[in-house]
Length: 588
Image 1: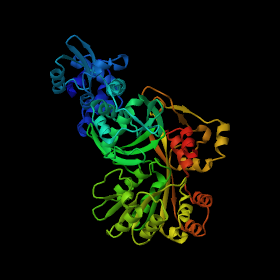
Image 2: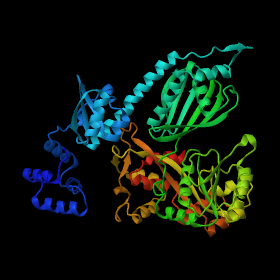
Image 3: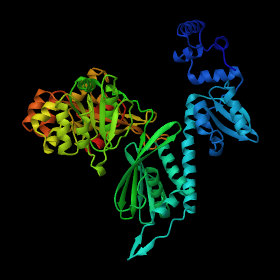
Image 4: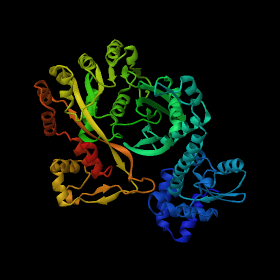
């Protein structure tokens, strides 16, 4: 059922779709590059991909179907399981009697057709469609599963019966550990927790919040950095859900007064996913927050993380130094750890010994010795760092500098022949020096040890298929000029060939979110905006003289540093994010 090059050539010439001269050229290219005539004709723009698929359907005698015009029922879609549909690019579109109509990219894939025929016990009618159509329909699985998950949760919540609470001296006494363990192992609670987790993974959530209220339980997902209400559950299931999560995380079931932290891991569709669990007692019960960490397929590059131009060169230069300190700063959840892990993966060579001390270990990297902090037994960052320097390391990563002792040890390690990577909570790169001085580290030691400081925020990415183009008005440009050096940013845009050399701000296109079915808010994913401060001689002098963060920032900008706001402007011009989003994350 495949269309040969000769069949395709004869049909195209017969119908007069492409001239004989152009076909001959395309054949030559196909032969030289060992490609099919179909691929060359489409890549050269002689025939569109959609038209080519229609041609193939006509030649093969198989109907072409445009799935945009078809409303597929959820029960029909689920006849072919999602993993099989994704793997083989085949979807069920209609069922009549004992016949199942399927749309696919390769009707010659008889093995898949036969497999589905045996699995469904139905007669299969193949139809040809485009990759764009298949991709669109595959997204419907998510909507279908979300509806299914909602039904499961409502249904199972009704079945759940928790142990009765007993009044002791006018207060409710929590159910005992044995009772809770029994509930946690009951099928309804297991199904509810599994469903919440699967739903969160489908939504690409980074965090799951389970928050008890007086009469209900609110479940929220953090998606692309913003919290969204996911579902409301009856209060009766709260204790069971918390108990189930405690069982998975190996936490104390009968401890309800103190915070607890744990971790568990699952495997879903070939992906290993780790959950970092935090349980906090609140007025209406224990609140659970689970951080979702994908352990597979996370091979990032610095370019892929959004580093570019001079900033990228500065990072590479700092990575090549045998000793000193690389600091990543910013608030919780801004991607500092991901940036440091990416740098570690670049440095991870057989000739070096890399050791880390973390709380917690977020991603496991082969050939790197990763150690988990355990404060309960006195194993802190400081004690761990003391042990690490006796392990003959070349490179050390300290998860976070939180106190004077850790700061002093990290600085000393950087001064004694080790490359040290760490994170610090400050609002800007320039704020790192005053913060370390506040922790009691001598300014001359900071100046001698620091190589480079990164500060970053995560902004939501515009959905590439539905963003809307616009240009700034003169009044808006004047307003922007109060917060940003527009001439400097314009110069950078021209140097990097992002805009034409003659362009001015009135000629530059910006983009705003345009909500669609695929991206309800017009955003999908996140992009980092950063500032990279290289500690040169002038910055070292200012650090020793205890200059303020503002003074250090002004000098760094004179030396060519782009601030986070300026980097955000560049990424807004490139169409990665919107100006509103850049201003939101840099001013909050």
